[in-house]
Amino acid sequence: MYNKSVIVEKLKEAMASVLPITVIVALLCFALIPMDSGLMLSFLVGAGLLVLGMGFFTLGAEMSMSRIGNLIGASMTKSRRLWLIVLLSLALGAAITVAEPDLQVLATYVPGIDKGALVAAVSLGVGAFLALCMLRILFSVSLRLLLIVFYALVFLLACFTQPGLLSIAFDSGGVTTGPMTVPFIMALGVGVASIRSDENAREDSFGLVALCSIGPILAVMVLSFIYSAEAGESAIAASGSMATTLDIGRGYLGAIPHQLLEVAQALLPIGAIFLLFQLVSLKLQRRPLLRILIGFAYTYLGLVLFMTGVNAGFSPLGYALGEHLSQGALKYLLPPIAMLMGWYIISAEPAVHILNKQVEELSAGAISQRAMGLCLSVAISLAYGIAMLRVIWGIPIMYFLAPGYLLALGLSFLVPRSFTAIAFDSGGVASGPLTATFMLPFAMGACQARGGDVMTDAFGLVALVALMPLISVQAMGGLYTLRTRRKSAPAVPEFGDNEIIELWEVC
Image (spheres, rainbow, N blue to C red):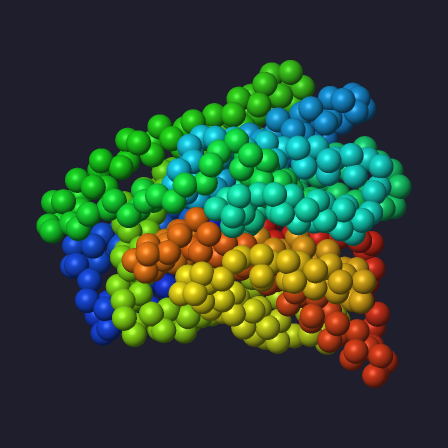
């Protein structure tokens, strides 16, 4: 079991992520934008619940989801039946995605589309591409080739997708690569790769996250042919002011029963699949089984606290702050304030520090952690700034995504393949929980107050943030290439075009 020091460490990591934006928002509300005191207090309570929720959730995911992915991946390949591996991968990918907290948050915000339908479409998209990933591992297919083919399909379908759902489609790809999905998918890939004995087996187990983030994009694009994108008011817009502490308490206590049920429903599919495997093939001993079950309990508790804090207090203030800043000349403060928030959000993200360290090791010290961190902070700040410019002027999302992905895919031919693998698998690092829970409501509030279309002008923020590592990491790889040409330096290790970075610990 995990001792208290590990729990404290997880809570510290969560606090480091949430604290910067909490301080910035508090300073804005006290010095520039007057806010209802009840709403501000509710926000601070929500921030506290976010810290607790993220801490327990990440701990639980490490104890249970990563271990389950590895065990099931190895177990389901023992039969060596291709149809069974594909079918189980589809079911597992869909089941784990349903429980991804960022997806639940995004689906709650989207107006005009049933939340269950959106979650189901995105989950099936991840499941389908996870099955494809298993086939890629077994048959050693080039990652670069698959990325080019499927992104070409994405942009072809984009020509026929409703504009209102185009931004949501790309946002869906960003929110599914989170702390629940990534460790499980990576562990599952390692388990499946274990049946191969060749020297490239482990390398072929990587690259899963890059492909699985494409599945939701295509799935929502297909969904657009069924649903009509209608502008409407998001659920967070209906949050009223809270005049007293009693109102705040009632708001949170009223939200908890709903979240208890909703989170239980989200975790039920993956829990049922694990128990089925346990009865049929895993047959774990008491101690490892108990560890996984305790991890499930931590995951459940963390998700309940996280979703309660988001819906009852954290997101509503973000929405209200965006509304106030969009008035009159204050609208020109939207981009710089968003860029400031982005700078500190990405600087405090624990997974980003792991990314920076891995890039330094990969380049044999030629690219320092500090240089990589600075590059990524600038890139993410620009993404938030661009997102706010879209809110102000209504610029179509494809004006940025099409050239951005074209540049990212073009760079893959010019930089070491290891940097390309890192870049495409780390796209979800930057679009962490705070992007979906605060920055997206912030953009939605500003857009709604300005009379814009939330579906086309506010959504797309997550997609822009997820795009930036694809370019910035490869740009640093290009810088490394130039430096190695000018002076004798250790060559970057080549892991093939299937290598990725492990941004969450796989147990």
